[in-house]
Length: 607
Image 1: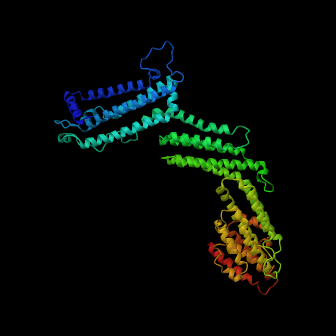
Image 2: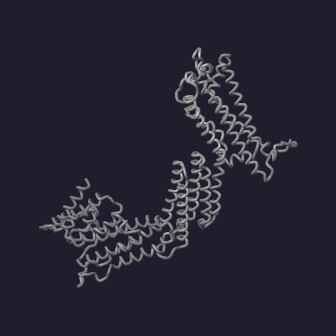
Image 3: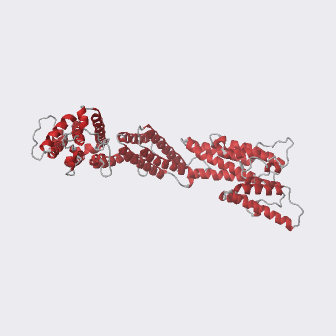
């Protein structure tokens, strides 16, 4: 490891004219010694002997650990492997050093760089040649040793991460050594050595510091491990799948218990922890974990009840609904637990995290599709209740007190009762509150949208009717409250509910200039509402089309764009003009010009 001494020795062989052969012999010598080292490290006879005195086995006696002695055999094997890595590292260090001196030393007379002497025969990079020999030796020796010994094979496959860590450490040490050599060469030695050692390009010669397209030394090293990795990953997948197949027996009806799920999570955590020695292995095991999550999802999906009773909302929870709740709760626990495992992994590669997160998203989607039949059923019932408001009378006169006789209408009372019952009978059993609220809040927004839509269609609407409808608006907030964390979280729907109520009592002119228009409440809803203030001759769009309110509501759902809705309203207004002209009327209803103006304003905002 002394550049001056090595330099002097090289000069001697150069003077003798045998520089090239000598270097070839030295490097070949290292290769031979290393090959011996690898053979000895993997010698099953030595590994299985309790003492160093190697007794000769009788004919046909296989060398294998005696029962109960496997632990000692494994310990000896890993000690040998560590020693082997030290030997490889030392040999590489010597060849690296030799190459460095060759690259920097020049003949004082001819000023020829020694490395150029060797280049003539096209083998400039002795380190490259040596490294290839080392990696080939490792590959072939490991292959033949594990082919002939089941115990070695099982050790390397079963404890592959340990083997990989040794290789990774070796690679790090080689890189570290390269940097150190470079530093020593730049800072050590006598002035005349400096003159001799011309500064080369920064480390251009060292294969451990850089990889090129046709030469990836680290890959060459790890290629010899490929078969053990494949076997390890296959066993890892079995370890992950086994507990799942165990807790979902064929013909089973129930999702796994808490303890069973915990054992699945522990297995996932353990596989990821063991693989953390290497980013590539982490990614490969993460892919296995993703497959495991998928398997859990598939098995859970098979338990879901999709029969009619899964979506009934009339009686108490049915057997099928109870099972669906249990499946969703179990999927939720898996989702949360795996998330926790990932976040607790230190230095988890981004790609590995992405792989597992994608699988978890599928679990979340499955939870969604499991509750969908129930949600749709509740949504349909809510809509059916709201539409019965048209069966009530909003044309009555104001009571003497100026207040409505009852706090709210009959349909509103029914709606409040239904929503409260659905939440306590069905949704209370789900443990994933956020998930439930994310779904029920969407239902609350839809209920408010339907309520405002139907309220704007009520005709005729007297002063007493307005008071009653205003009371219903206030009660609507209470009705949807159980569906959400806070009613004010409902955003735009909530603002619409709040903004529409005062419009009931304003004049048409006031309404037309309200700041809430277009901003909070769509123009089409306000125009729909203004029809109630017109004479019967000015028919609402659905009356003109001779549709029921339910059919009109369906049409509005199918045509969410304001453009389509406004076009239908325009048709109704044009039909009214036509009918006035036909009967040769002298004037239009007072609300008509306001509606036309509003329609033009609405159309201009769409441009």
